[in-house]
Length: 142
Image (cartoon, rainbow, N blue to C red; front, side, top):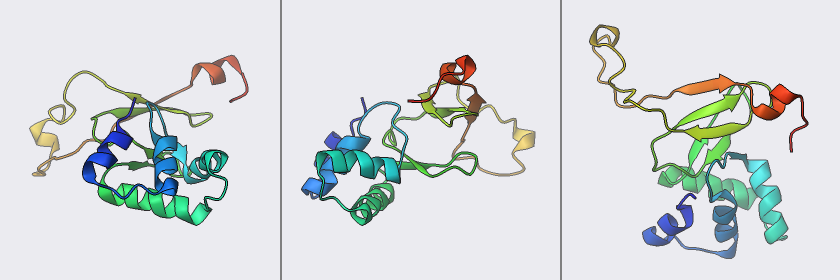
């Protein structure tokens, strides 16, 4: 389970009912929702929440470094609450489902010195692609 709510409380982030609902919707493992999906789920809990409030809250969470924006293959941006746990993403090429994965080894050391072209590498983003079990089986997505 993501510790997003706990991290936000620890920062002293002003927890209005709207912000709390957005954070609750995002909290969890393998959560990679679009802004519209966050709004739909937040509105189920707090019907008066506006789309603008959701977008503003997501923008603030990204600016704080508490949530990461994830973009894959030109699809809508998704929001990942596991910003403080190093991980990579496994993406279904058909339906776009995203899962957090934790490969072994340090990808920073995987790039040979002669392939760094003098760069000081500080971050690596690896995206694994394939088909999820539902797409392989031809099942409709839930």
